Image (tube, rainbow, N blue to C red; front, side):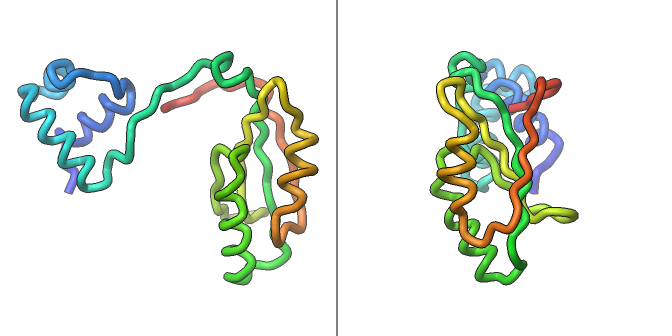
Length: 147
């Protein structure tokens, strides 16, 4: 069970995963050793899945972000499973979400400046199993982006 102190720890690490035990303890009102113990417990419980560096757009190849809504031919379990297995091997797809509403999946695809969305669409997305329709939405500008 996550208590209010754990939530403070998670929020602090979400904002800056590079915090020292001392700095984290100060932010959440714990000693460094108590903060460290709590972090280890949150990791063991699967609440913290990992740590990563947040890279600038230039370090990521100045990508254009494309959101692609995917409609499958049907919603049979076999169709969903085949599609999900296939996208797990696509390094171009940064995020994939099963959706409710008009379409079945929403994919987030950062396309590096030295690549083309046409290649990604033609060579990867159009070849995914079970796809009936792909609709691409190009992000003009990112307003809010959290870790």
